[in-house]
Length: 295
Image 1 (cartoon, helix red, strand yellow):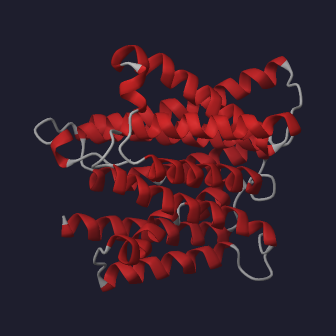
Image 2: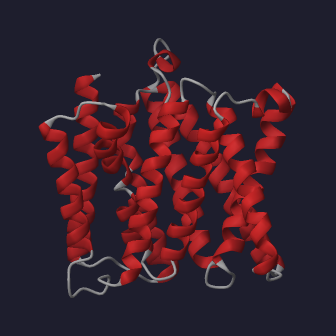
């Protein structure tokens, strides 16, 4: 998500912004952990369906009484909104499927290629200028992925293509978010994405339904709640501090994913994976720094 400079200028509270984004990425890591756990018991379609339905119902409760349903769903670019929703559902399906085969921290790190892909794709799709340093950072990010999935390593399997495809879908999702930011409000964009994806996944659900246990049903509710609250906290964080200042802390999601991976799934990244993850993080920070200097 992006918030214009006017949204936080004159009301900067960087400590509050940092605290909010750290809590947001903790919730995103919790969301991914629940997705990985539940995907071991239920079809991926059902897990993703639960995420979007709960998210959408919570948005109905939070935003519709405040603004009215028609105001929230009114859009000037329905085609782009549909394409944006499809990109996000692709991200969810690819990433959640990947979590069945790829450890949490490594899959999260590969998914963080998305900001680098946005930088590369913004040239042909948005006509933006990218500096030589930013191109080098993009290249370094892909080198980081190669270190993580090094040939001959345990992750060098076709399954690694799943988080890579997730990152590509998320990159297009972010580009479409930028194009729509001057057209529709973030509330409208996120609400429409939730509704569209809930409808799409509900149409497929009868072919994949498996009745959950009570505890797993609660976990599914927690899954959607973590996603919804994470997005709300992320939006609030950008109201208190500049995106360039908050960018480094977004990579805390990889650390939280590693923590959950160790505590719940008994997985610790090896030394090569740690080096590759570090390279990906530094590459993303270099791109964010370049954008800050240009801004």
